[in-house]
Length: 155
Image 1 (cartoon, rainbow, N blue to C red):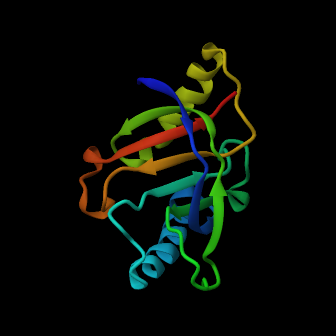
Image 2 (image 1 turned 90 degrees about the vertical axis):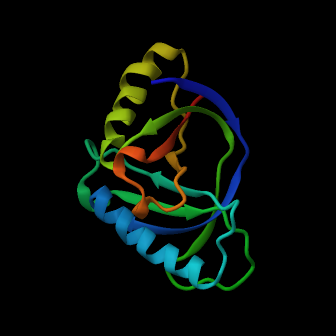
């Protein structure tokens, strides 16, 4: 796995939060965010979708795991319950491209956090890791063709 160290600008997003097992939390969050942004015609060709995994499921009890489904949308319109605004903090990140099913992302995280990071000379920052989903519609993409950038905040 090739890892690049990159500087990212802060990114304003709309987001929805899901809780529980990551697969269920993600489905819940995306199921709330995407109908809102599509229904209000807020998706543009340059819109980026991002998932923020806040917790390590090996440490955090499943009931306390949080996942944010995000889209880089800047709008002043009133937001419904469950959709909020926030900024993903900019700074230095280790970025790796994961190819394949989302269910295999945990293997990439394990490699990045347990092997690459300790050997890299960098330290983990106190910001959440996140994923940038590069496929326009993952529901219509074969799992083996999915491309996801994983970002680990470092200093």
